[in-house]
Amino acid sequence: MVANLLDFDLEGLAAFCDSLGEKRFRATQLLRWIHQKGAADFAQMSDLAKSLRDKLAGVAEIRPLSVLSEHSSADGTVKWLFDVGNGNAIETVFIPQDDRGTLCLSSQAGCAIGCRFCSTGQQGFSRNLGSGEIVAQLWHAEHQLRRRLNRAPGERVVTNVVMMGMGEPLQNYAALVPALRVMLDDHGYGLSRRRVTVSTSGMVKMIDRLSVDCPVALAVSLHAPDDALRDQLVPLNRKHPLEELLAACKRYLDSAPRDFITFEYCMLDGVNDSPAQAEALVQLVRRAGVACKFNLIPFNPFPASGLARSPRERVLAFAQRLQDAGLVTTVRKTRGDDIDAACGQLAGEVQDRTRAGERLRRMPIAVLEPAQRV
Image 1 (cartoon, rainbow, N blue to C red):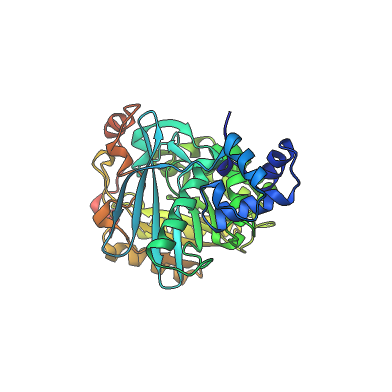
Image 2: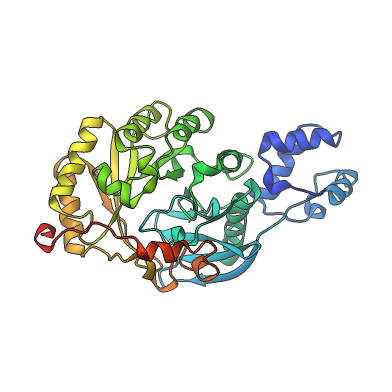
């Protein structure tokens, strides 16, 4: 069986080289060629002995993902739709800013969590991605963009990676951790732990494991100030309610590369955006004692959700209440609206495998009365 070298972190490559009778330093050379230089052909790897290159050609490959489509936004955002087989597609989004280039990666084809406001959730879950399929998204984006932007050799385009694309990363833990290690390795992409973020909907036990195995920046999809509403928006909350989740966040900070947790909060018109809910959010994190910042996210509407984006004035008022309480709060600028850059919007056009979207349309949700919204 031919091995895909994108599947391996440095330790995995070292074990693979050992199986071929090669020394460990060959693994370091391979990691550099593949990830720093973007080589896909062993013949390009000029500092490897020809005998090794010939050997590798018979037992290994660097297997890219097949691109179904690429969309570029007027604001510079680029979105790729990758084919991962059997009718499944995943999305990867590059978001350029003045001081960074952020790449949003997917970890699963579909998602089993079923968050009400997430377009991916309506597709249901198909399968976990392998480590190589996670890393291949970064490999493709980094090296294609370097060529397109005519960057100097070694000049990095992707400076930040966020595991915020399709899927729940911590449900695919075995593949996630080796992929993170490639991102962090100085012979791979050399990213700082502060610049690699794993986003989770709240898998408490896996948050604790990540703190030991590969602590990076952590973002938690919060989206509600109380269990009753979060049960509706994030079904995982029924298993891991807020008190349990926030306690895990506090534990994570002992090993995290940042001194705060980022709480993601999708602003939904009349659902979670009232002044009373802003106040409840303040009290929630104060009681928990979690050092945090809030990222308020304008909702990207999709037909099956039955939800709408909060008006900008209400978002700003919500943010102001959090800031007045001393909580660092940002409002995410929408990017790539003209190319449906919200996760799952393009892949959702490929297939709704489990009719999750149809079920979602039938689910009621508690909505605030108009008098409660102001």
